[in-house]
Length: 338
Image 1 (cartoon, rainbow, N blue to C red):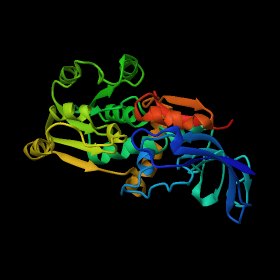
Image 2: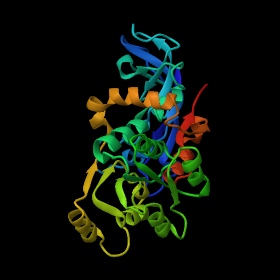
Image 3: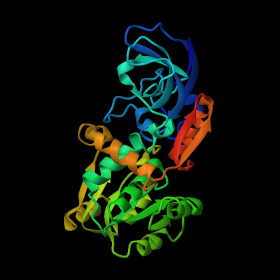
Image 4: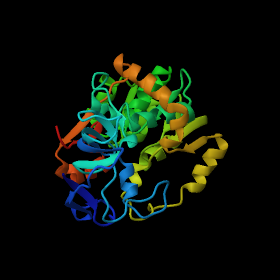
């Protein structure tokens, strides 16, 4: 069995280019005991992948130049040498940017297509949904009547954050790019207010949408949005930090005066709580609750989701570039096979 792989050909400088990736057809090894042969159906594209293309020190080892790009996948078991997996099983795996893979069966989780569309295992019922759930509830701790603001609010993390905030009795304000996304926040996801960060009146619009200030800011973007939010923070506000996508393609420090002293002054004077997190740290304590709660919320439509599906593995590099600039609308998936 052969697989078509997308490998990291070079470390990107700024926005990833086509030349930073290579397409390779590779013969897969024969199965050993306990292994399965997988055929990829869906590949998840997520902002964290940009960091893994860099050699800079981070919370996880970088992808080596010449290696297959990493990524979560929904796959079909084609062949199995494990008693726990049978051909035809649909599983969640981490097969990366390729059409087929051989992995240990213990590294997969069986999915039930009757319970929910299998694609949701990469979105609202997967890592992005869990990031929203654990970060908001463990760090943000929204209380009834408080105001929760989240940027990239139509994405899989942001849309879940706002809807969970509503379930907990808080007021949800979403920041998104463009009128269509802002309209979806109100009409589709049930946010209380939506603010367009591309509008020339963004700062004033944010102030109007948060008349009582901001108690929780779920940070996954950074940049000018964060600068505007900081001006609206209330005393004892909490800021869970799971990403800073606005900076991922940056090749130099921002121009202008150093804003860190003023920001640290805010941290002190407002008694702010700022806590970065990687979702994996909460798996032992929160994942079972997440699977139970989020499945129920999706089933009763307390939480809605949107998917942006691109057809064909060959479209992956271009789709990934779009992800980093906010071109996607919903959870970005590549449909690799039927």
